[in-house]
Length: 428
Image (cartoon, rainbow, N blue to C red; front, side, top):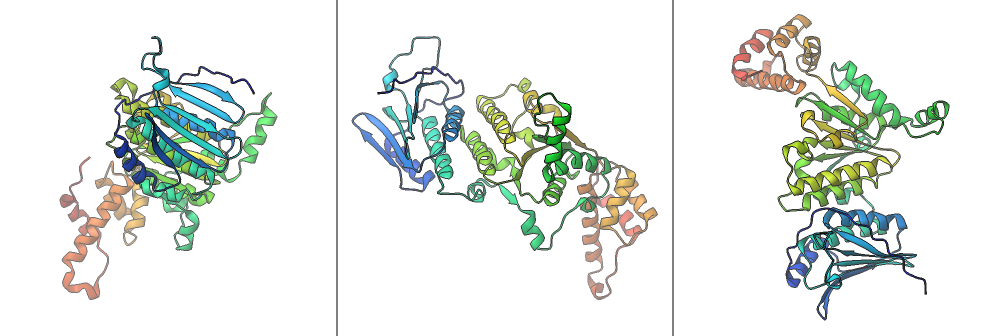
């Protein structure tokens, strides 16, 4: 028999010791997993969760260790041999003698033919241990082939997949001409996003001419920063169209949960599902909600979430044809470790007078340039969204005041735009 190798590998993260009654845990598994191909039983004094499926590669077993790391404070890998890995949780204080190891939570992976996973513990599972099991089950079943469409994973999390091919079929085509102004921003986006996604080969080839050891130089992650309404999301959709890659749009409120630990689990699942696309762009909107500066004094759950985000960003960046875009209007609040993950930071300024005038051409085409300049002067400091909101307001007001003359409806004139300004409530 082959001698077992022991690797005392330790990981430090958060853990909740709260136990959950067996029958409550059983109901929770039934609700979350919605499948029957697992076994959850009590054997003697042990609680056991088992499942099996088609074989997966060794790299997926290592991914499983990363998932465990999201939830379990301290654990060691105490068996590591061909086709078998076993790990066990440890006490809270690693500097004290470890007692009652036989009663602690264990996870065993056997993958010599098909994959068998067993999680067991003397007594009831804690809430964090249950979360670990649920995430492992969902991840491995996903990788094992029962669910291959990443949309089926993302949609229940409130994450939208913006597909440019489907949008074109609907007649919705986007390009740089869809956004007025921002010539400097567009140039940076071409350089850091569009060209590398469209044709990565020349960027890799140049390193053979410049470096002693050719290495990757493609951007892994790009940060869009600027005031609300300056077009960060719109520009990301334009990149999606120009490169013909789906954009996984992650509204942060869909990830954050009031339940301890769920936010980290949701975020990890988003990255895992997005990685199933052959090529994709992951857009994390309002990323400052996920990871603010450590100097602000993070809660334990937020630290855990930030750690998962950093690790997933690193892993996602290794996959060819994928890139992450983060969007924020509070760059100064972002954690320094998170900021360092972004190869390029693109600032979206508020539009200047000429750009405001150009934007207004898209919403008030009946006015000439000098008339639009007058409105642009009134709305100094406005974002593109503010300008659209103002034109929306003027149009609604114009239709209402001409309600009895709708058959002869004409476009509003400059005096009406200027007259409406005082009631719009614009503050800058």
